[in-house]
Figure 1 (cartoon, helix red, strand yellow):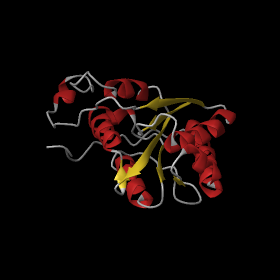
Figure 2: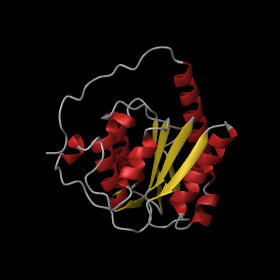
Figure 3: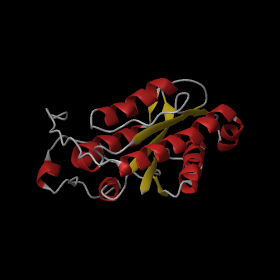
Length: 203
């Protein structure tokens, strides 16, 4: 089994990355393979609603950023963690652009697979940001991985996150809950419901 973790921060080794690595450590101890993808600071296009992906084998027509790479990797992954810093009480714009295009073009490769939203903030805006990311899961037939508190860490730099003991515990628990859910799904003998989308969300 494999979990793909997406770092939606431009800061490669910052607070969001530290949160993701805590989850990754737990998953690896549970014998689950992981890969962290850094969105980095390169430009990422927004979805323009051209519907070209429907005629392009579930690939976005834009090939100059990381979106199609993520869609391709999603085919062989069993779970996902999307992490983001909090910008003005919402996830980073680059992560939202990726989510719009990945879910619209390749959503069927994520359906029925567990997803976790993780955010980092200096102080506030976290619950609103988690809510935004979770909506991608709940609109795409994905089980949502929770913890014993909201999936957040606090700090202005990675060293601060280390001191957020409750936040770090929450990250560990996300890893444990993700592993438990993946193993439960693996043992499930019931077929996926295979429901069809009822509408097109991008017009």
